[in-house]
Length: 196
Image (cartoon, rainbow, N blue to C red; front, side, top):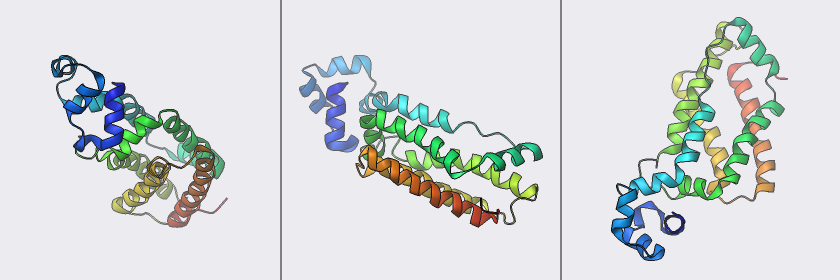
């Protein structure tokens, strides 16, 4: 697994050959096939935990009633959003090589569209919030589904840029603060919510 990780990080999923991994690990091709169906299965085994963690992290969309949306808006702040974002960013840095594989080296694999996949999931949460805020009279504007998707995609991509551009952790903290401010005030402006 470690040899496979090194090869995939060095060459990416598409360019890495099983023979390269076999040579580096000093095992036979048969030994790999006893544990993994193919190169794709081996690659996925390396990133499976972070892949599922991300989907689970985003899988808490719930419909809002009028009380729920009021409470969500009242507790919403730049600081709260920053804490939530840093929970995920901290996890990315704790599992940096796996996220490098997933975000930088996965072209040609079944997870090459990971950012789009998590955007779709997070867009569902944002759409529920936006709709509830509008229907309860807090938001003055109601963006359509594609607008919500595009804005969400921008946010997810911005967080992933830390890994994509090898931003050192200390700088990532400041970068994420700015991204959160940009997103927070941007969403409030798009929705016509009063700034706080």
